[in-house]
Length: 217
Image (cartoon, rainbow, N blue to C red):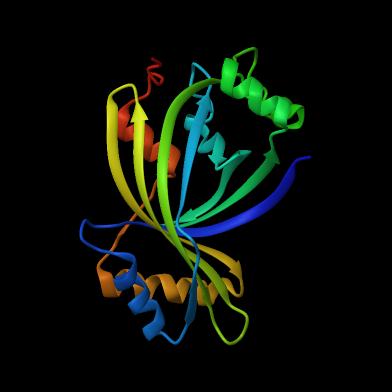
């Protein structure tokens, strides 16, 4: 079953030396409360055609492993202004047989509703980028129900040109007004002098480690 949703988030490049506590201190000074979540490790494998159809259309397909769970996601950009993104997201959970096929033969399980809509014109998807992420997240809440997930991601991209480390701050609006979300991210950016991350993780990884596929052992 494919679930469709709209994702609104803001992303910033996280400077070396800036930790989650310092980021949260700014958020709490604005009057919000937070509840930390257990740190997690996830591996994303990004797929694209030989002609990089997805990369060239600001879209992405990934298979994410977190523990024993595998989730596929297709994202397409709808609107972007500076650090703020609005994307349509289609998500599905891989079955046990699909997980086995993915791990043993590296064949992705992409629902027909996704592949039919993309019209790859006979091109097949292949693995082009891997991203290993240590994520530390906190749920931020206001008195009026405003809710945001704030994450600090320590990412290692692995691609044709080797590997690169990348740090990113991500805020996703879970509930509340967009104007309030904008005010929070502007305050955070101004106080910490943050640089907007204007590219998706997929595109950023491809910029850092190349466009010619992941080397396999």
